[in-house]
Image (cartoon, rainbow, N blue to C red; front, top):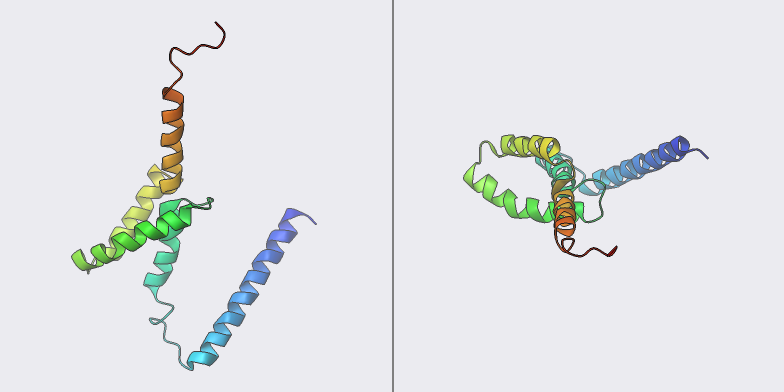
Length: 126
């Protein structure tokens, strides 16, 4: 199979499972309100966590979730009216300045520290 067909199959399977889970939840709850479980704030949180930590990495969403969890309560307490605006600004800044998130930034810093340290004065060709 080609990659396109596999990706399409994976997305169709994920959508079907999400639909079944939503149907089961609706039956279990017997009442669905858009601002309940499926609130806009929840969607923003799900989007922000991996982007803050680093998309495409294993530890990125974990780091992003930890940072988001620590910062979320303070932002809501200090800026109750504009916390979503601050999340949007943070999202734009991270995407523009460091698309790899915190994990990508740590990798860059690690490479810089590895290249600058220990290479002076050690010439194996001598």
